[in-house]
Every structure is written in C-alpha cells, then in structure tokens.
Image 1 (tube, helix red, strand yellow):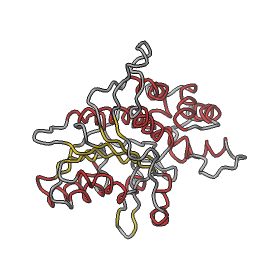
Image 2: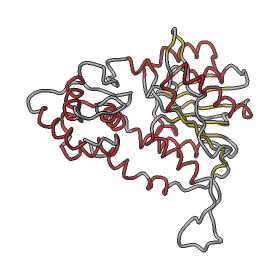
Image 3: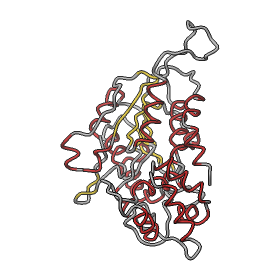
Image 4: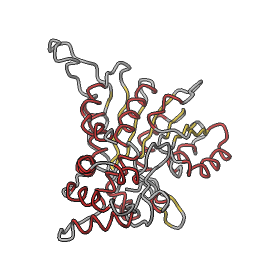
Length: 331
C-alpha cells in the first residue's frame, strides 16, 4: 500500500495534519523521520525554524529529494541511508530527540518504479528490494522449497490458496525463470473460479515484499530501538497500512501502557511501570476528505505513545510475534 499519492506532481503524506497536531506541543527540538520517502513529514516539521530533522530511508532513490532539503535547511536536516534496525548507528551528539515518526507505506514513486517490481502490474524479473537487502523476490520464487513457500504466503499474506500456489510455482520453475507476469498468471490460474474484492495477486505479493525486506523484524527492532533512543516525555508515532504491521504496533503501545505483573512469578502487588502514556487508545484514521483526495489512504491508521519510563523489557513483545519473524527466517 502506498503512503503518498502524486497528484499534479504533488506528494501527499497520509495523515499529515493529524501527525503534526500530535507533535505540535513538542515543537522546538529534533525529530527522527524513519521513513523519509518523498520528505513530506520532514519538510512540514522543518517549516518551524526551531526544529531539526534526522531522516532515514533504506532506499537510495530518495537521495535526490534529500539533497533538496539539505540545501534548503542546511544544518537543520541530516540524512542516513539506514534501516530501522540500524537506528543505533545515528550520531546524536547535542541532540535531544523529541519524537520519532514511522510511515510504513510505500510512495507512488516506488510503486511505479518497475525495476523495484513492487506491483503485480509490472513486467520482467521479480525484485521487491527496497535497499540494503540480502535477497530478492526472484531468489525466493526460484529456490525456496514448496512447503516454505506455502508457509510464507499463508502467514505473511493470509493467502487461502497458499499450498496450491506454491505447488504450481515449483512445477513451473522447472522449465523457466518465473517473472512477475508469470507469477500473476500462476496465481490467476489457481484462483480463476474465486471471486474476491482485491486483485488475485495482492496477498502473495504482500507476503513476498514483507519477506524480501524483512518488514516484521525491521518494524519490531525499529520500535524497540526508538524507545531506547528517546528520553522520557518524547513521542513515537507510527502510520500503518495493513493488519499485520498494525497488530504489532497496537500491541507495542497498548501492552506497554498498562500496569501488569512484570513477571508471573512475582506477587500481584509487584507490578511493572508503564512504558507509555496513550492519549488516544484507538487509532486515528484519515478524514473523509483525505480519502477522497487519496483513496489508498483509506487503510491507514495512526497510533502513538509518549514514553514514561526508561526501564522496559521488550522480550515479551518479541516473543509475541516470533511466529512471524520465524517465517522471515525461512529463507
């Protein structure tokens, strides 16, 4: 799902006004934009001269856009070609982080880039690499065994016909390299009698994209790294676009904003400190007007939390989604 849409060469970051209203009381400090993309969030925050931005993106294709902001805002803007899991590599000397932002969608520029191969409308070799990757979708489709392929499609894509699709892939790849259009045809043939509201290939392509970019482990590590990076009183805000990533973000904020036993072996009166304060317990959705302007934004959800405690153990968080990260490691 793309996070921005390009209308008349303008980029529209999803839930921009809502995000800015959340962090506005914190104005006057340094913010980290973990998903720079086309820089919509970063530039809006930089409009206030008291603010600095440290931006990250794993995709080197954003460098043209970062150079524009670098020239315009000089020392108030810094960019790192890093993933979420590499947040601890940022140099924060003389910077007190007031907020960290994640927009987990893809920009229209990325979707339209056929070399990335994120869309089932593309032609040619399967790819889906967003930068700093160890393998591509072609590697997965060409070499992963049938059982693991089925598991990837089922767990990461919630694909009902995962086993049949995996079986057909393994059969077809004996004769030729499966390209994007071939994979779409395989899926269509398996699901030809099924009526669905979404494109037949949506779930399989989602699963492959998540696997190739290790999106689950990156998100989990990124959230934990963010918590460890910011001082008490600062904010973490996340915009999600599909149910898997939203479940992760929801658990992260909700579970660690509740008082509970820090261990099942401790007495009931010995409870852990809350890690977050939640102003909004439910997600924030785009307005009707925004959805009209940018239909893909309809699936977006914004969740955020304010850090209240330095001493939090996120082992339970990691264990909660171990089934997903285990599938990511099947490669």
